[in-house]
Amino acid sequence: MCGIIGIVGKTQVSDRVIESLKRLEYRGYDSAGIAAIENHRLVRRRAEGKIRNLEAVLKAGPINATVGIGHTRWATHGAPSERNAHPQVAGRVAVVHNGIIENFAELKHELAAEGRTFGSDTDTEVVAHLIDRNLDQGLAPLDAFKAALDRLEGAYALAVLVEGEDRLVMGARRGSPLVVGYGDGEMFIGSDALAVGPFTTRIAYLEEGDYVAIYDHAAHIFNTKGQAVDRVVHQVSASAALVEKGAYRHFMEKEIHEQPDACQHTLSAYLDPVAGRARVPGSADQPPLDFANVTRIQILACGTAFYAALTAKYLFEQYADLPMDVEVASEFRYRTPAITPGTLCLAVSQSGETADTLAALRCCKSKGLATAALVNNHESTMAREAERMWPTHAGPEIGVASTKAFTAQVCALSALAVAAAAQRGRIDAKEEARLVSVLMEAPRTIAKAMNVEVAIKALAYELSKARDVLYLGRGSSYPLAMEGALKLKEISYIHAEGYAAGELKHGPIALVDEATPIIVIAPSDSLFDKTMSNLQEVRARGAPVILIADEEGAARAPAGVKILIAPTCDPLISPLAFATSIQFLAYHVAVEKGTDVDQPRNLAKSVTVE
Ligand code: AGP
Image (cartoon, helix red, strand yellow):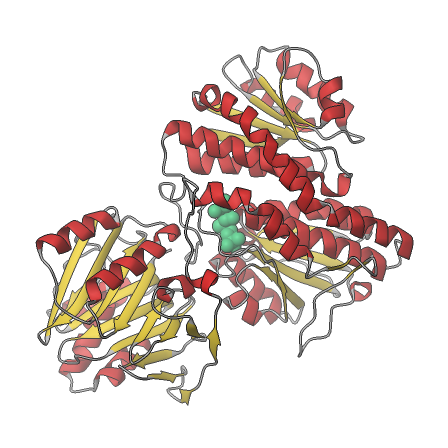
């Protein structure tokens, strides 16, 4: 996911663009660049790799300007390189882009046939040429921009500079978010609140199809029909705009430690501990959903959000007797799903912008199904397009590897499962109150779970030498096994797989030998003994085993097994109690391996392109 900033400002733009791009680093990138209007001329600096490389280029070739655009690029079309870095320039026009122009090949062919030459392999360059061609035909800048937008198919967030327009930056969004920042005598556009956070906390969120012209004192916003529109200006919290690592080495480490607070804030939106009730959030224009009217839940999610939802499947079916289908959105959206009436389609997403999940949500909406979005970004596209927005309150999650958003999602879904059970008459008020009090214990339980970090640091070096790792779990520990494997592979680059422990003998046990560490997740529940049998099977084949168990389980574990102790707790919250161990395991192994923990290679924080 690329990062965008545009500034019509009063002070030097280079430093401000760099500062903004550094706040967008969490999105993942492989090159960066800036364009500005210096003495009425369009100038540009770009660099492959990290922002410090761009800073070096600017040091060698400073820019003296107050209006400019900047970009961190996560390569889609065209390898990571300086020539493919944004801004892309054609004639008088500089463009930065987040998204994919799906008809760029056709447009490139059309433009080349007119004699236009291209300097990159990117899809974005055709946008600059389209605008430049429209200017050549005498269109005013904003009309030239709109006419170019009307030719594009696919997803984009754009920021544009035009030579000769000294105090203008134009922007547009379709499928990728873009915000307008309102300063004091200066204006901004950016990918999100973090991008403009160093300069302002007064923000308007562009809607699908909007385009905008920002000048010193104003933003003129238009909808896709070209009609002038107003978008509400929000005052976002300073924390949402400015996030620092504090005393931690990495955002991921900080966010693991923030989980008790993130879960506490999230649960407060779903639980009434005084009344002993779990509740479904409503809004001014939508009464709270009544699960008594829901016949089935269809979850739409990707990656970690998918595993959080899979954890909830066990709870909704056990407590609410409510069937839940959980499928990765990238598969769901291209199937012809047989969805029964009364189905609630629930998108689960930290960013609220994941392309596949958003597309699947839109597919369900087009079928007239009830929709909801459980999102951490409450102003995201999913939040605004779903009939209902159910919040997690994890705060900004910067590390690409999701941690506090995962546990916040599990908290929210667990509370919704209890609310559904009560609304569907599967539990009485007494049991509801008991489950609510168990959920209220979750933040303290997660805080206690942090103690496992010391033991994990001692294991990390050995585990960092592994080539393949298997994670095993049963019941709601099975999704946790898959989440643990995802964490390890995405930040340490070690191949890992999460398996239902019962599946071991159906193939994966062929992988097991003394070089294959096995991580077994086993709370002391009704499946513990069966999981211990699986543990013995892999031990018998020489595999080094790390068992994640509570005190009772540790006492019953076979000899010769390394044990990580998670807090003893009610089965309802054991996924929350055990999550910290798998997160710290991945984190400390990655630290041992020296990988880029917060911005792992090839990954983006939110996958806003297919
Ligand atoms: C998780 O650590 C990954 N960063 C990734 O799988 C992520 O969970 C997935 O892309 C979904 O993102 P979302 O929650 O923003 O939709």
